[in-house]
Every structure is written in C-alpha cells, then in structure tokens.
Amino acid sequence: MKRILVTGGAGFIGSHLCKRLLNQGHKVICLDNMFTGTFDNIDVLCADDNFEFINADVTDPIQLDVDEIYNLACPASPVHYQYDPVMTAKTSFLGALNVLELARKCAARVLQASTSEIYGDPLVHPQTEEYRGNVSTIGPRACYDEGKRIAETLFFDYQRKYGVDIRVVRIFNTYGPNMLENDGRVVSNFIIQALKNDDITLYGDGMQTRSFCYIDDLIEGLIKMMGNNDFNGPVNLGNPHEMTVYDLAKMIIEKTGSASRIVYMPLPADDPVKRKPAIELAKSKLYWQPEVSISEGLDRTIDYFKTKLDI
Ligand code: NAD
Ligand code: UDP
Image (cartoon, rainbow, N blue to C red):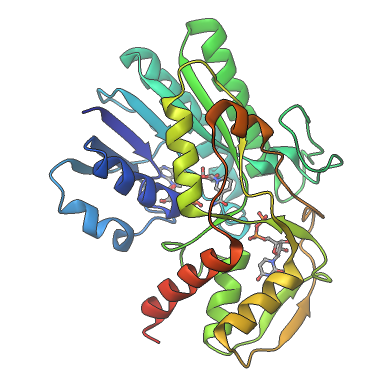
C-alpha cells in the first residue's frame, strides 16, 4: 500500500483517479481548494478509511509524507482558468514548485498533468512530443498555456538539479462523468444544452477540430505512466480520433434526440484551429492506447448528465 497525494483530487479527472487508486488498495490524500472541485465528486470516496481530504491551496507549501504525487490542481476549462488568470499562473507555477519540493523531501515520484495547450495553436499536425509549439505569451489563454510550460520546465530542472523522480504527461481533451454542469467545456456544454433543448452554442464556424478521450482511458494512461520505471516523458495521452466541433454537436443532438438548434457565436481569441495527439510514444513506452470510442463515451456521459439533471 502506497501513500499517494492527488492535488486537484476533487475535480473531474482527480476524482476518477482517487477512486481508481483506492480500488487498488492505496492510501489516497486528496488536496483541493474546491475552486472547480465538488464534494459531490468525492462524497462516495469519503466513506473509505483510506481516503483523506485536505482543503488547501497548492500555492502554499505542502507538509506531508507520501510515496507518490499526482499534480492535477489547476482549473482546466478556458472559462474557469480565464476567470482569474493571475491565480491560474500562480497555481501552475507555485503548485509545481510546491509538489516538487515535497517530492524532493520525501523522495516521492511526482507526475505533472501537463496539457496539449503547451502546443498552442499548433503548426504541426498531429502533435508529436518533439514539437515545441506555437503559443501566445500575451493572449487570454497564456495564463494557462505558459503556466503549464513553466511547470514542465520546473519538473525537468528539479530532475537535473536534484534528481527528483518526475513524470510528465500531456493530456488532450478528456471528457466523461464528474465534469461540472457549468464547466464551460464543449462536451458538457453541448450535452447539457441538448438535454434541456436549449440552443447549442457553436463557436466560430465549428470547423475547428479536437480529439476527445474518454476519462477511463486517460486514467489508465496516468497510472501506467506513474508505474513506468525508465521513462520520464513528456508523453501525449489522448485519443487520436479527430473530429470537428460541428460534428460533435450533430452527434450529441442525434444521441439525445434533442430539439435544440445550433447557434453560431464568435470564436474566442487564440482558439486552436486543430488538435490531434500523436500517441506512438505512449503506445511504445506504456503499451497504452484508448479503448473507448467517442460514441460509447458520449453515451456514458449523457447517461451521467441525465441523472444529474434528473431527466
Ligand atoms: P477540473 O477543473 O475539474 O479539476 C481541477 C481541480 O483542481 C479542481 O478540483 C480544483 O478545485 C482544483 N484546484 C484548482 N486550483 C487549485 C489550487 N490552487 N489549489 C488546490 N486545488 C486547486 O479540471 P480537470 O479536467 O480535472 O483537470 C485536471 C488537471 O488535468 C489540470 O491540471 C488540467 O490542466 C489537466 N488537463 C486536463 C485536461 C482535460 O481535458 N480535462 C486536458 C489537459 C490537461
Ligand atoms: N466550443 C464551442 N461551444 C462551446 C464550448 C466550446 O463551440 O459551448 C468550442 C471551443 O471554441 C473550442 C472547442 O469547442 O474550439 C473545445 O473547447 P473546450 O473549451 O472544450 O476546450 P479547449 O480545447 O478549447 O481547451
């Protein structure tokens, strides 16, 4: 049994990860400031004696004794990370610094949840780990993108300077149960709108692409990366099935049998035109690839939101 710290453990990805680690028999400490995390997500976990919740901010130094750390604390939806951009930059930088200091003190292995956003609006397609990105330092997404980039830098400097045992994964758009109803990201927005027969808010012409990974697949990738003994990353984790946002809207309308109509709204500044992970590295180093199709994953997510909305 390991003692494992999950920062951001009450959020979407974190709550699934905590559950999985508890099921594996570990002691799990969830540290979260509840900015986008919810007690709904962790209520069921609190009944487990091996689960501990600490209401704290990752920008403050952490004093714990742990064997492994997953650093997930950071709002991930553009709506939420742009709400207080200074806080987002602080969370990314100071959060990384604090978990790395903790890992150094406890000789713990530490995994950073980085992101496809470090590639910015990519000029290379699909995005391989060697690609260094096309990122604005001054735009509305920069607080998140540059925050995540400096976090990666800190991770590799702590490895080189102090020998800290690091892992870095670059997560591409992930979706599933436990996303917030007002999360603002496209999958949850469209499903909620469709279930309520409200207008579907399509930004731009809807021809921008994303590649959506179901949460269970991502969790498998995170666990495999943490368990890998000879590879630090960075490694892309995502589903290479690329689609337009318009096609996603059509698919969700069809699956929900919704009477919603699509309304076109302005494209937010610096919204990436296309995104698709190259996952050859994950396949060869981790023997990992996604198993859940977009159709199956959407069905499960729609069922979750139906229960949430009491439909
Ligand atoms: P989320 O917003 O659901 O979860 C983030 C969690 O971090 C929340 O519980 C929030 O309360 C907590 N948090 C935020 N700031 C904090 C702080 N200063 N101190 C302590 N806790 C704090 O987002 P998510 O989708 O679960 O994303 C988790 C991680 O994965 C994030 O680091 C995100 O950047 C990364 N990621 C997610 C995706 C995705 O598609 N979901 C893609 C790329 C990267
Ligand atoms: N999007 C949209 N309508 C919405 C929310 C998002 O058309 O209600 C678009 C957004 O402009 C982007 C894509 O869907 O092109 C994915 O957005 P999301 O916020 O989920 O994640 P991103 O990949 O941009 O961080």
